[in-house]
Image (cartoon, rainbow, N blue to C red; front, side, top):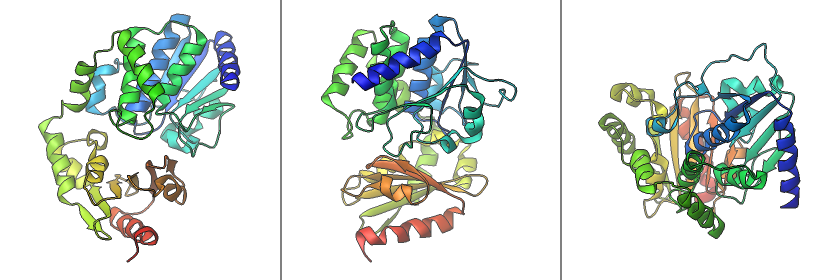
Length: 326
């Protein structure tokens, strides 16, 4: 903890001597990314700094309620700007920043706060803890070390980050320390029922139909130990939804009793394919993902292949022969 405390003190010295601060997170943002980015934004606001936020990708429908209009920039506006400090949250490498990957070259100092074990410590200052539940929980620890006030609004964002990256506190990354911190957030005024309703119980009918279309194409291999489904551009267009809106498919497949590893393939318009993997066995899907330049956690990881969704399916199914046999 002393090492982390020293790093936090260094970070806040940098903040105090900075005028222009930038915050960014990984492309195709999820709850941990959005919650962490917005929490840090609100945390820094009282310091009267110029704070800019960039994220590559649309905010999924179930998080839009929590993101104020105009806060997150979607297009590059930093070509002639040098930020005093850049915060990179929930991101294991610069490539995961998507179209903003070069923003690290527009900062005097870069700080990465992350919990992915595959993080390669690419920033100037790195606070990485792969044992902690989420970037949001790690950020909360950092905020507490600073001694600055954590408002109800910040608490809500931190709660969202932890809630979503622990699968509603059901994943093995949820510790007693996680629950203790959640109790503190609730004491700050977080309304858990309201947040749960917005994030998990507010799916528009077209999103549900797209989810069903995806699940309808589920294929099981290796004595049903490996389950795979596809979210194609055709499914998106026919249901008028965005890729980020269809959440939880890979977790749904993992709920099948026989399934040990679940996989969802997401087809981009450029015909590259994003691969999401989940494991409930001793198979480390982060190690699988590293083979393709991706990363993540032992139980949840992903990567991208520059190939069609059909070819990608063949590659992934074949890859898991080594784990499950013929």
